[in-house]
Length: 304
Image (cartoon, rainbow, N blue to C red; front, side):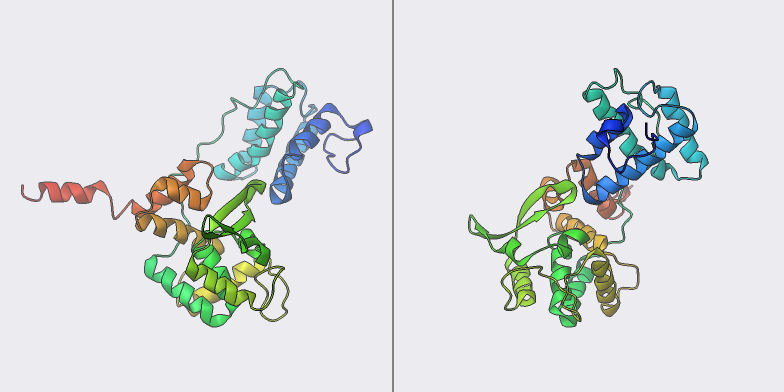
């Protein structure tokens, strides 16, 4: 039988129960998530092999606790330990659902507590976002289109890089709409406002199909790394003195929507967050100082 740490290449006839369970779990995911979980399971399988354990059958909660401790002893931060366990916990959860094990040994395993009260991304305020969008259009039409998709439609870098001309050709209930496949392969449809449409059309030019945003010099479609470089160039040209990434623009779109009075539920739809608590992180990051209770309390007792 092949080593338990071997997840690829797949040879079903000689695979152990643990390997088959891993293949079944990983089949649920694609692209970067698939690669991440595959790496996490390789680490778990290797640890089990080094300790004489089957990675699935006979594993107890104590074994999982020891593995979590070993991750910390390797110098990983608490947040990294929690992230490393995502794939392992999913692996056991679905093996239990599929009836391969009678109980899930990871479900009650103790993970380090990580405080996630607010987003730490450096976003842009309203005036900075306006300047960023204006300056982007003066560089190239491709920089302009990228800036608007990130800063108005709150797309992720990979989503903006993957937009095709055909993706925003439809009209739905009187609105021009953009179709995309988001994080976790989830389809999404969002309206394209007139200012955004103007910028996208300028970027499209006479083309009728294919990738929308191209590398200005080569004319090849951009990728995620190109998006980072283009955003950095725009930020420098706009005179923004701190590090700005594509996620900074997505962050700016969400926080400025909240500043504009958009209800939290609608901001969640804009961000396409599955959990409203994720959107609440942005809300707390936006208002934890200017809306802090001490201001109201000071005004209340000012006459004392």
